[in-house]
Image (cartoon, rainbow, N blue to C red; front, side, top):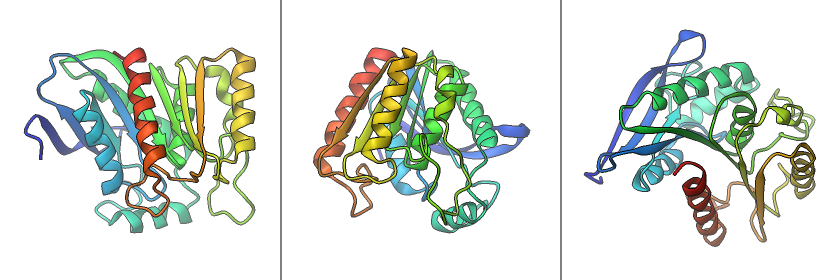
Length: 246
């Protein structure tokens, strides 16, 4: 472990006043820092996403990842909790927003914050990060291959979520989108549709799609991991955050 970074499991006040588990990683050697809410992917509150939060801390950001499945399966293994949440149709959007807002406020209350907070999400979390950016006062939004922002889940999918492109008018922060050209959810056509809509609305955004990459190309624990795409994606993330959050 890096002695300059504090990592811990915390409980914070979230949707409906519930206490929800979160993974916190923050630098100890930075006088003033920005913050990031990290929204985990569909497989849940796992080591791969905790490593992402840790990476943000190494780059000088405080990062908090809410456990979105905490209510369904407190103390369960990530894959078990994810299966339970999936069988129930996924995390309800309004509860998700409450949990993310609770994490944002918790980070905003830290004594050495500069007051700026961004949100990033992967897979289902990419959709949720986009939704959060449309509904909450974030300073930067990063959507990593968020599925079902534009289209409905396919027939037979256990997920009962709806597209959120109709909420794009509410965006107040710039958006960085990172996608794989071999992905089906979202497909390149869906990415193009979202790009078109944000341009129509005059919302500041930058999208980049990678050749030879499909879904979850950031996930180091998966066969879908594409090192070149992920490394370039991280470069773009930190350049974007340096400009938007400081």
